[in-house]
Image (cartoon, rainbow, N blue to C red; front, top):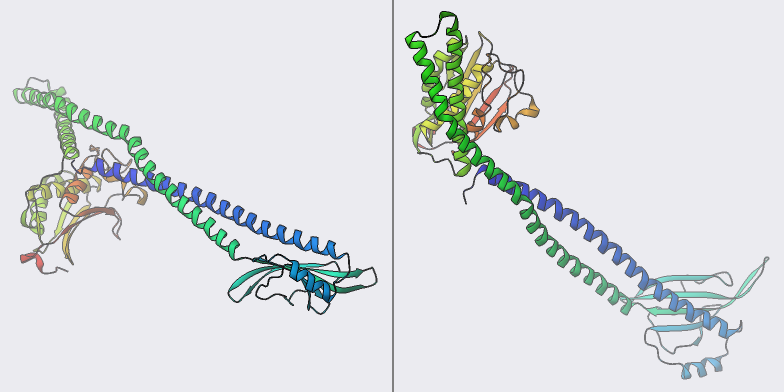
Amino acid sequence: MAHTSTERLLRRTRLRLFITTLTLLTLLVAFVGAATAVTGLSALDADVDRALDAAVRAQVTALGGELPSGEENQEASEAAPAVADTVLLVLDAGGQVLLNRTGTTLPGLPAAAGLPATAGARDIRTLATAGRSVRVLTVALGESSHESSQVTGYVQGGFDMDLHDQQSRSLVLVILIVGALGLLAAALIAFVVTGRALAPIREGFESQRRFVADASHELRTPAALIRANAEVLEREGLVAEDGRDLLTDVIAESDRLGGLVGDLLQLAAWDETRLVLGRGPLDVAEVARDTIRGATALAAERGVRLAVDAPGPASADGDRGRLVQLLLVLVDNAIDHSPAGGEVAVRVRRVGPTIAVEVDDQGPGIPEADRRRIFEPFTRLKGTTRHGSGGTGLGLAIARRIAEAHGGTIAAGSPPAGGARFTVTLPASGGPGAATAS
């Protein structure tokens, strides 16, 4: 399929839609994943704390406020089941173990840090010891009143968090994998959906192109006949003297219509396929000088001076006819927007690996907000034309496509003295134009 400007526009639009859709889906998946992870991890933490709290409370209730003796400790330790991940200790007021209810040990237990100083108080924390994480809950035993609080001992429960941490990592890993697969599926769906969404637009562009081409072909013959008949009337003197001005207007408008039809056919053809260039070595400075000589009569008719500064040589590989067409568009546009007595200046310079062609006028200039869209077909700025030609709004679109077909660019700006400046850059070639002109 030909790489046309329409296809490039549709591809860029599809890419923007795809990126926007995928970004929104990524944010949604990230939010849902983060919420799921926070909820799941919080639930795991709460389960550990609830189990630890239940075990410690049961032991406090079993003690009934009395600390066990050494014999009870021995009997309890021998009878206690060996629970590998949980330790339940009864400590005296100094933090020494009186009873190991589970008969197992965990690194860091008993923990002297965080022992409550008030009877009935509790402290829960996570300790990192010997490369392991242990959740510890300590409840102070004793009597408490308004005047005093005497701590007689502690019940301390510990839970090995190794399995908990593994479950937490597994949960996060599952969420990441599911999220990645979801995003992959979302990307595929977004790619397909955006392609289908743009299909009607592509068909609309194609229908428009065919309509423009067909209509232009149909208009070409009537426009030519109108002009030919008007010329016959003028040449044979078949129109009264007071109607000659109208006849002149008919011929002028016929020329304008013919130009519009030609431009439309040209743009329609370029939309269908690439612009084919007859490339060859040429001197852009010489092309500019010849173009200015050809436009001198038009400029004089409108009271505008032409000046060219193209010392050259400035060599490039290109299509001479197309470059003349490009420069004529820019020069004619500059003449049309310059006031009577004004000047249009054309400069050609080699700048590094490129040839720069600048066309300056002394017109009202181009608002910065419009400097990109003026290269779109049928774009015309209000209140900028000096000589009332109006134009078709296609010239700059054609100039842009010629510049791009040469691997160059065209841009609108403003020179320091005011007015408008159009700058065309073309890839330079070796040979006589390789010397840099300053």
